[in-house]
Length: 228
Image (cartoon, rainbow, N blue to C red; front, side, top):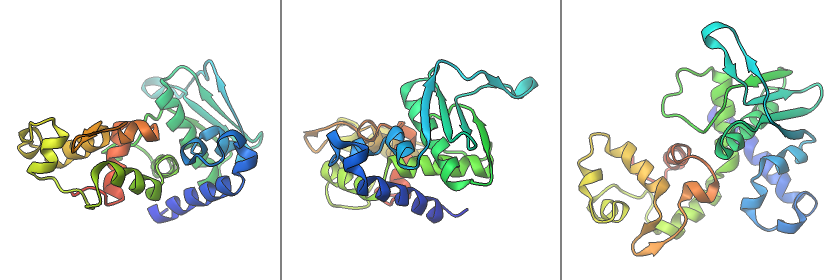
């Protein structure tokens, strides 16, 4: 499945939630961040999402793992284990919603914990990567990210990695980025986790969207908001 198809599926769900926001989340109907919630999304598509103390282990031998999420299409239920950090639980829930929307031919998924996107996708199957991408697109919509990004870093897009941007991102130590052996990767992570720029202080993009720094760093590159 192509990335644009996955992102389109996430956008369809977002638009449905926005249309039904007065019913789905009456107290925060006009807060776009409140609507980017796995519980709200599950309610929108008629799936019961619950959190359990644990979901057991699955697999055999060296491939046995602690189950973080289960999708059961027949019972229209998604279960998330509470044994993991909130960030991991949230992204795993989005991952299971991705399976629900994208992979209708499969009735059951048992998944490992998914903290967020990874730089190297090779160890994961195509379906798992697709569910990861859906989760990232759902929690970090391109248009909302662009608005939040420009409010922090200005209207120059993509933000370049140069002495000026590196100065602000490193609190006056630009060589940490400009002379880094993995400059573009470090740059993306620095922008994702940045809490001040140009004398302005703010919550980091990763924190505002409630995703991992790595997920946000990858999303910034995918949406063309940073150079590289």
